[in-house]
Length: 455
Ligand code: PHE
Image 1 (cartoon, rainbow, N blue to C red):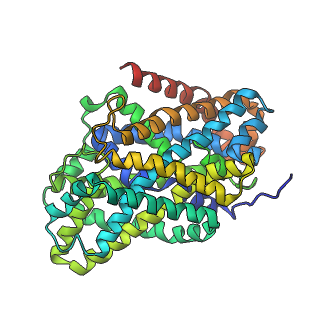
Image 2: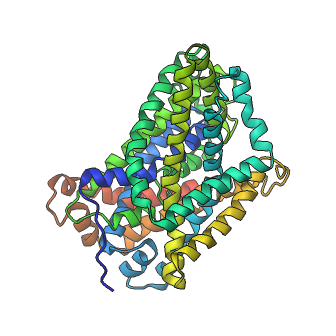
Image 3: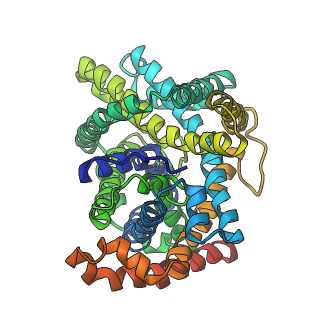
């Protein structure tokens, strides 16, 4: 039974691995359109506060559960609660949520594949900026291409999970994340220099408080959890690989800050281009696929070679960032089927491919032929995203903070946070973290969750 679990080698490795899971489409694709749909700068401010005051404590709590229990997300709750039936049941949510997210995450992964293919065909360089931006509408509303691309992206992800070349992909992502970072900076510089871009910068810097509604809080918190891979077992699992010597406050803060930085940079790279191109900021999930090609086409007028190279590398980097995140989503379900149902890895992968494939096809078609199908006033895609990010993630995060704040003994939490009292700084701020975990986070999550429904 007592298998030797792998450990991450050192603080930097921990931050990189966690940042690899956290940084993905959530930052580059989802954050900018959430900002556009929910009030610009006001949303950004709420998002930053939610990340520091609520998500960071939840992140710490997940790392503690993982490191303390030294096992997978589902069994972690069972083990630490001494097999209490409620917590054993709660652990199952950590399997359901990532599987549901993988269904629609891979649709956006598919869009990135299509845009990579388009970049290779120089589609953005040989056209006007307006036409480049307009390509999205035609693409997404068509039936076959988005579906095929989704299945290709999901297939590649599942193959990696099946073949266990994960280690290779993760090494690869250590290169692509910095590349993506540099490219986003480059696009940011170019994008703010476009005529009309100033309006976009103002949109991100000057809050219009009248835009702030209870929904803004719910969406900002949901986005923050989503972006940090919280509420779905991923960080608990990674926490179980963190060695007892590591200072989890330092690693968690490092991850949260780099994730935040990535999202904000993406916002500043995309919003100015959105305004320069005359796109509606609340255009929804297609936002970056409309604004970024506009930037590349503009750039292509004077610098065709640079624009072609940058667009190809940019979409490739997005695909890899999305794949590293999607791998961790699929792996949760696969390991569950293997351990609990005794399936082989190959068969478990096939089952997940079919489940996520079928539901993903429905999500994909909801931008085209099924766009008329509305459930609770939402398209199928929006419904999946809403149920996961605004309901299940908040629920799971609540369970995590209640578990650490009220079920685990304070002594255990203190031990984990301070490495048995050997980290003086952590020892000093422990009361603050304990307070945030026990009172601020659960109350905020419940209040935000409820107001979202009532108002
Ligand atoms: N955090 C990832 C992103 O921002 C999404 C993700 C969530 C990945 C949970 C893995 C687990 O794209």
